[in-house]
Length: 153
Image 1 (tube, rainbow, N blue to C red):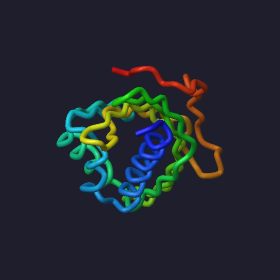
Image 2: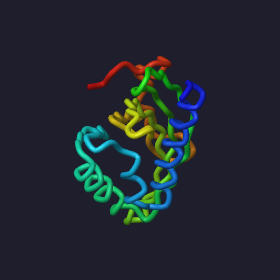
Image 3: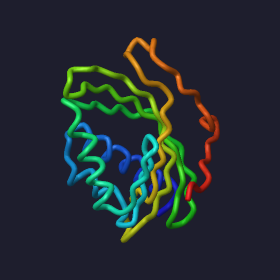
Image 4: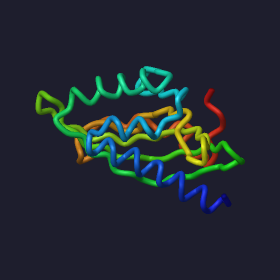
């Protein structure tokens, strides 16, 4: 593969991830992860597909709906590994009827396994949370200006 093909494959991986979240399809969602992946989200870190899926299912059970919308992404590709980041918007309503909007950033490490790019590591930083009119809390954009991510292991 060349860098253009790799970048398209990484963008497709992110699209598959977001699509599975929006459809609440845990089976498709977990296929985006490497077997030994690590996910850090809101102060929690889980490793391995089984624990990652269990944590995701626990989180999703608290929502009537979640709509994840992709933003910009950048990738640094180096052979069978890559690093990158992407911005996301999320709109949700929890099981108590509370609506929320979130803007966040994933810093990622990817690994190509059997010709397919997968998430090896995803670290989420919350940038904004609150109402859709952006009157909520801005958490800051620490380290958000860098195009490359550096390893988070």
